[in-house]
Structures are given as C-alpha cells and as structure tokens.
Image (cartoon, rainbow, N blue to C red; front, side):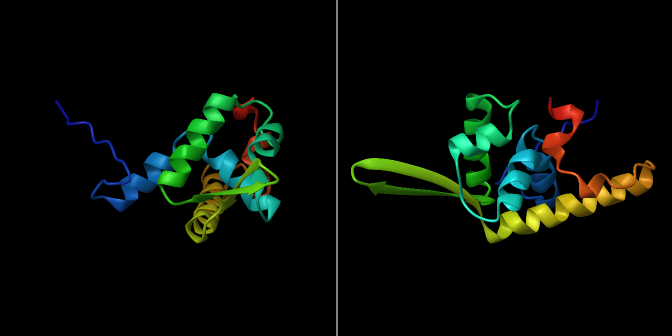
Length: 127
C-alpha cells in the first residue's frame, strides 16, 4: 500500500507545499482577484468580486494565504472604525506568475488556448 503524501507550509518539500496551496478551491481566484485589483481590497469587495464564495470559505482561504505568505492583511483604525484590507505580497505576485504559466501550459497540453488570458473566477468550475 502506497503512503499518501500531504504537504503544508512546514513540509520539507517546497514543490508539494506550493501544489498544496494551489490546489485549494479558492486560492487561485482570490490571488487573481487581488492581482488584477493592483492594490488593496476589503473583504466585502473581494466577496463581491468572487460572487460564488461564502464568507466562511473566503475567510478560511485568506487566513491560509496569509499563513503561506502570499497575502498581507492590513488593519487601520480611523475615527474608531477598524478597516481591514488585503493585498498580495511579493511572493503572492510571484505565485500569480506561476498560475499564469500553469494555465498557459495547460492550454497547450489540452488544446484550450487562451485560458491564461481569462481569470479563473469567471470559469464555470467556480460557479
């Protein structure tokens, strides 16, 4: 019986760690949405942009992306009101480059040209 290999951020295999986070359902749409926003986004703006994600799933995804160092959470308090926003880190931007390359390769391997030009949030798989 083959041993099942799982990976986390603390895994000794960097490739498995990246595949682990990339394979999460909402990772790619969240990262792409932040990437194309070209700046910070509030939780509500993210949830609105990703119309089919629940608040719990988005919260869980953001928490994991922060843990993996792909997203940074910014909090400021102005006039007694806390404002929270999210932005990609340098590694988050590099991750998006990897996603683009994977989509381009997938398009070439499976004769689906142009996939790299579309955001995953618009893919029927995320509806």
